[in-house]
Length: 71
Image 1 (tube, rainbow, N blue to C red):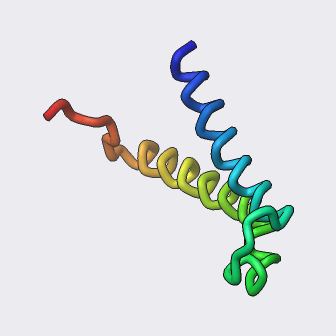
Image 2: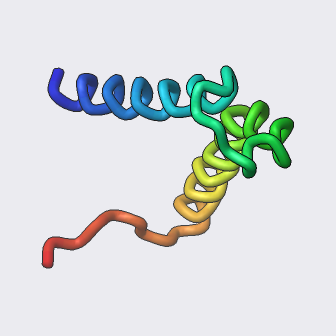
């Protein structure tokens, strides 16, 4: 349950910041100049993280161990 709460809190924070930027509650020249990028950034992030998961699965299939070792 704790991990679920962490993910929900992170999602809520990112969504909140994104929503503030999209609705122009926070005046920013970056958002004005790159509105389309900010608007579609969640979709781009999902695509990028999806590629990372696919790459990890491919490396595991090739026999590369990606588990974290205790330090």
